[in-house]
Length: 76
Image (cartoon, rainbow, N blue to C red; front, side, top):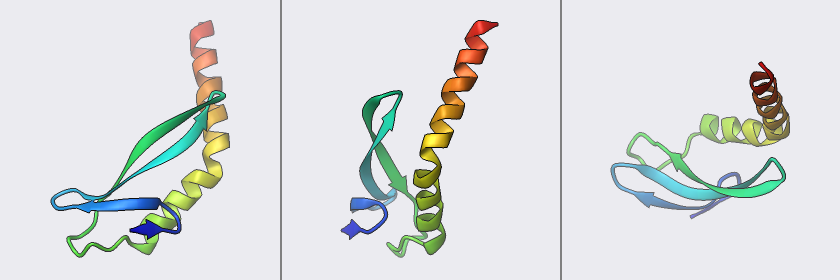
């Protein structure tokens, strides 16, 4: 299935929807697995889609915070 938010996904019984997404982190591209649990009806909820969209929109800020936190921690 091709989803507007999550991209290409496949369904696996007992797990839900699986896909991959490539994110930039620290100047490098990383492909990560995505697992979306459902209630057994093979439907991705609107809340799941909205949450993932929000995550993607805020990814650059989250990334900066993670890097800044690690730099601060290593200076101690």
